[in-house]
Figure 1: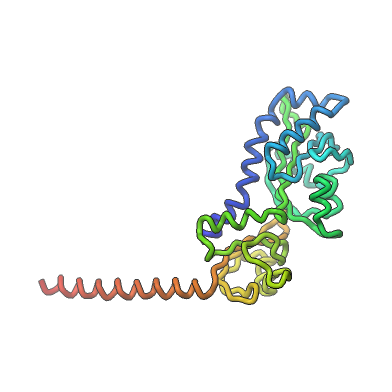
Figure 2 (figure 1 turned 180 degrees about the horizontal axis):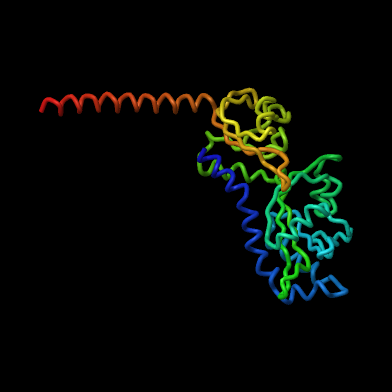
Length: 276
């Protein structure tokens, strides 16, 4: 359970970094004045600057309070944003930075990202994206716009391997999009996709955590998994850590053996003390 907590912290740490990095420029008066300009070239320069500084991001997009796109880090001038109006209205009303994970359609995602990133995506697919919404609030307390960033989980092979730095290679980390593994320390056998067992997937989809034995890649693992939800509470995937059943059994047997030895020694000590 501790390893799962570490895994979740690693998954969410970059969203926290983005929020801290963008809060200061969002409050900068010189940036806010650009929202009332007829030329958004300076905002485009800022979007590119932030994208270069936070180089793990695929998306840096600036919008006004009417959800119109003013600038993108990829230079695209398509006015429509990949996020729908309803969640944006919710985010604007809160007037505070928000981090969420969403599934975004490939065609909508491609408006926001570089050509190279778009080309790597299968057509008619969905992408799991960690989104950060940082509102731009003027001195009167009015929301005049927002900075929206996106970090694609599907393209993050580094994430699972950070887990192994803490718990070594005996522990696997898995992130799924719905039931399919999209970021994992576990290699696919024969290039085939790896999917969660149907009973585990159904349990997670119903809103329950899973703890128990799970078949993965043709082997048995002791796994702990929790659902990942989007901003509306809809299930979109899961995060899990898994330990091979063999190493897990060895650890359990060793712990049991150690407990038995401790118990025996304690009994001997108690017996000796009782007759002193």
